[in-house]
Each structure stands twice: as structure tokens, then as C-alpha cells.
Length: 236
Image: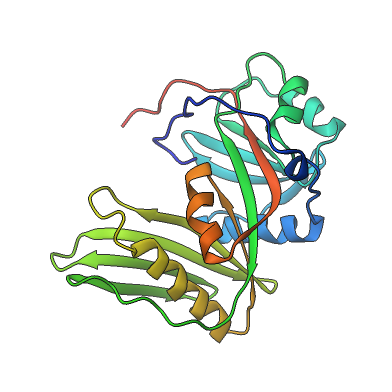
């Protein structure tokens, strides 16, 4: 979630039994949180309340607390927080997290932490009229796909940290979808990671993102639940 976004409204269905049983690797989660902070260009996470706290500082995401498992600390933290837009994120199924939350808390949508092994792969050609633009600031790379008029059609970020390639903010804008831009973007970022010696990748996907990433070789590592107290939207 980012500034300007709102909790979405969707019907949550129970997770399949095999997915509910998945347990996150704490070291992987810790590395991913550090990578997320890197890609978002905010301060590195700090230990707090049994979680890793990231001081994001956005109007609709002031802080996020990431837990690598469901534990009593999750409920204790939720009871202490009374203001909106402080996010608690737990590597656990939503149906296990929801019962321990106070009434004001909501779970907008399920999330999925995914991983894959990287190797140099041939990159699909961009459709005519599109071109790549790379902003490389190691260990961060920002990739955009632009139209001939210079408008951004798709974009994504890659953070390389502790041997993990963290993919983040992979987006294709309206009017440019179903043209293979996201696939081309992921391929380009993956090759950049491999050429620096990083062959393990991680990301957190929405339900829609999971449908995109699984055909590309990404596999579910753990279910990932976000909870928050919603508030009024930030002023423009």
C-alpha cells in the first residue's frame, strides 16, 4: 500500500490447507524487509515488538511492522496501536490473523510472499513503440518501459541485498496491459540480478500479481497478511 491508496474491498476465502501449513524462513523474511526498505528508499528496518519496524513516513502508511510468524506479539502490538495507517504484516494466513485483532482492524486482501531461482534468460522483445529506460543506482535499479511519446507504460524496482534480489513495485499502467510488458520487465530485472551474481529472488504479490508470477517460475514461500486501522484518505 502506498500514499493515496485505500484498503480494497474483497471477499476473503480460506486458504488451501497446504498453503496454510507453510512456514516462513525468518532469515529470508528479514532480508526481504531490508530489500523492501531499499527499493522504497526509506530507512532500514529496526527490531521492535518482536517484529521488524520500517518507518515509512507516508500519509497512508506511517509505519509497517513485519512478523515472520504468527505469535502473541502480533496481538499485543495491535492492542497498543490506536491510530490509522500503521500496518502489521504477518507471514501467516489471514484467517489465523483476523481472530486475534481488535475490532477496528481490517485485512484488505490476502498477500503472497514468493521466491524463485534466477538464471540468465532470453528477454522477450518489447512491442513496437516501447523502449526500456534504466536508472541504476547500485544496489537499486529502477526500470521503466516508455512509449514513443515518453510516457511510462510499465515500471519496476530491483533491490540487491544480502544475496537476494527483491522485486518491487512491478506495475503496468492502464491502457498498456496484456502486451507482455510486465514479463519483459521481470526478465530484464532478473538478468540484471544474475549478472551481479545474485540468483535468489523474492517478492510479495497481490492475488492478481500471483497469477502473473507463477507462470514465470515464482513459487509461494508463505502466505502474507496485512492488517491496519483504516483512516480518512490523505489530502492531495
